[in-house]
Image 1 (cartoon, rainbow, N blue to C red):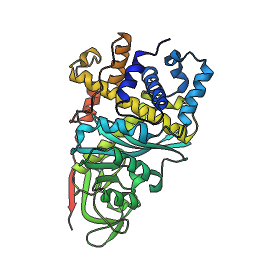
Image 2 (cartoon, one colour):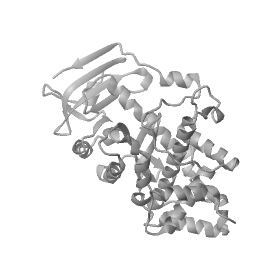
Image 3 (cartoon, rainbow, N blue to C red):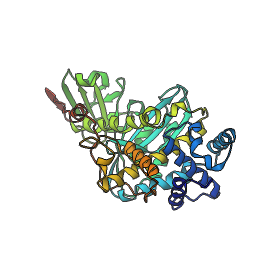
Image 4 (tube, rainbow, N blue to C red):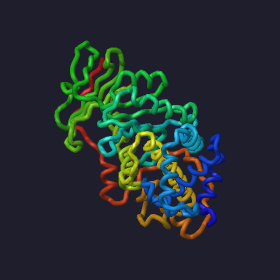
Length: 385
């Protein structure tokens, strides 16, 4: 059987940017990514139908796929970083938003990811899986992920990093300061804050009454880090918020930090249930899972690129029945790929991420109202230095 057209065309395009020493590795990479895109699964056995051109029995296929996933020469630096650099080429000198977060797999493995927030969702710049029974990790566990993300970013970008309260680490903030990155991190309730007047309080003592917000300037945390603090207590949020930031505290601090939820959480959901169903994967090895997630991330970027082409060619109405964009770029790209394969049309030339940030998708008026919800505070108190 001759190789499928999707694999041939994908291999031809990827070979422009990905150039491993052993060309056979790129063949396997392109085959696997093509199989992921068509099967929409992170489960290796689901790929077999799309690898039948090799004329192998199922067991031989699985052994070859397992060997690929465990091969130490299949690294993000060689296979994924060049793809991301090409995809983000147009963003040189732009302001970008990144998120740092973790997600658990089977309560045994922890996925650490730095993602690029775009179009109301996100896609990974760098990620790592480690065998760890908790979503809370130390700086030494994720420093390499930060370094990998830094290596793929276009030059001269103004970066803002958002992170949850498990990342209020002095080493992280000092690293961000060394890179001249801005940041906004949610603070734990027991974090000690030294106020501008010299008093020391825990964050829990600086939370406002319901429907109010406190803005603190020029505070000190973690011994010597100068920053600002914004706290809010809104019943809609379910619990009080406390956000430390390099930028002066304002009500926009909460809006900025809120972008983390719409960015990385849906991305993890795409990995687990809404897209690739990685929870069905039989792999139980941190290095093999890291390789698998790299393949899924490459498939995600390709799907987003196809969706950008659909939007550019004004063909959204042929794939999305909503009056506006109701599908994420990821889901839209997967639908476009299915249509191309069904109609036996060639894979278009993949495009770079456009130099803009479109609004998030919403599939219903209720979802739109939730996205557009504006929170009003009954009182805002500013504590100046």
